[in-house]
Length: 365
Image (cartoon, rainbow, N blue to C red; front, top):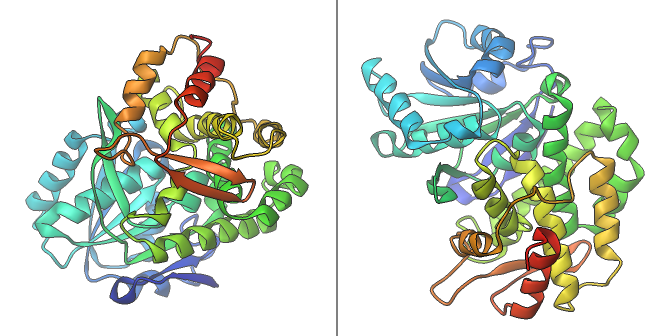
């Protein structure tokens, strides 16, 4: 059993790799869950994931008090209404501060459950059991929890670290091709911002990754988690370096917001945002000119989009970017590429370069 520790002093926690644990093919490591929780459990999942993995997970929990809330499936339900419904059920079922919430699902379930845990009775324990590639390599690690607002993605939230993250890579076998590819966008992001050797490894192993070779997936997920864990440990509440993990997200969140939550998957928006960030970096003369083509080839190999949806308006796009969480009173900040494998955060925006990037991708000068 492999484990990575997110080092946060008294809030440190493990990312534990337990293939087969919640898919029901291997329960030999069930004590890893038992040691992290009390006798009162509240599971949040969605309609799709619950049908696959809720029964095996409940079996692992033995005779503990277990209540369940099943969300509708999709980004459109990452809302305060779902938080209200979860808290209502927690109260009605008599859950106290000693209860443990378990997020069983992808990024939406993880974010909603984490935020509910952060605010219920001023904070209760949460365990993340991510079942999608995107949630395994990104959203389940680091304690960022949030729901969306019609004017902006992840605008209502809190930092609330989990007690544990449990990875069962066997859940990835049930993902649709589109959902699997969406997770690969965050993996490409990790490599592009932090590790050229990782980027090269992804290029060399793209066929094995797309065929979902288990050993290859384990290596890839562990590599991404180590990158994220190290960055989170150095800057838990995103005062500086952690913002680098938002490479492509200022553009990507604008795409999601303007397209309608759920119509463009988060990972797809990140892929498009990565291309826009790379293009801007070239135009502002921080990145070598052939880098966007290299990035595009890898994203395309992973069946990810590199061209934006039609009909997005530049003025609306700029307004959505202005609501980005990295923005300050002084204005917009962007994560740019200095190289493939090295990123930087800047508030020195090259307005002409940004105009050119938006005109190129939106075809709407």
